[in-house]
Picture 1 (tube, rainbow, N blue to C red):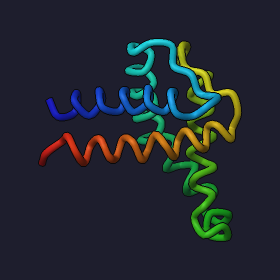
Picture 2: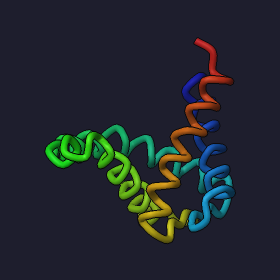
Picture 3: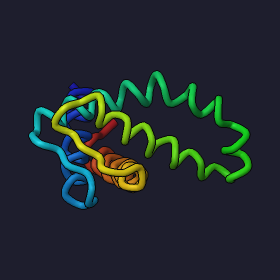
Picture 4: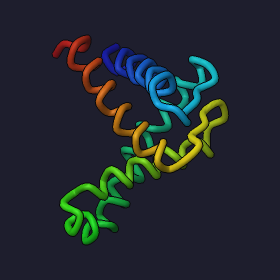
Length: 113
């Protein structure tokens, strides 16, 4: 039950990102649910591989390149899911950062251990 509630919160966070960040659009709430699921799968399967492959540049940039990786993945997910649009990589980077913050705040406030 907690997993489903977290999924719904992430979809709401995605709708908030679409409202707050220009260049990011989510068509409907079901599209937001699908995008939240795809983001979770990409973060679980693809992101760790990219972090390991880009470890030297991540060390050189003192970890800031992780933001670029997150933004590129956020931007790439828009090509996978219809109803979700990210216009630029810059919007993807800002959107991924805002999505992480909003999702973290909602989870900290509403999900009890």
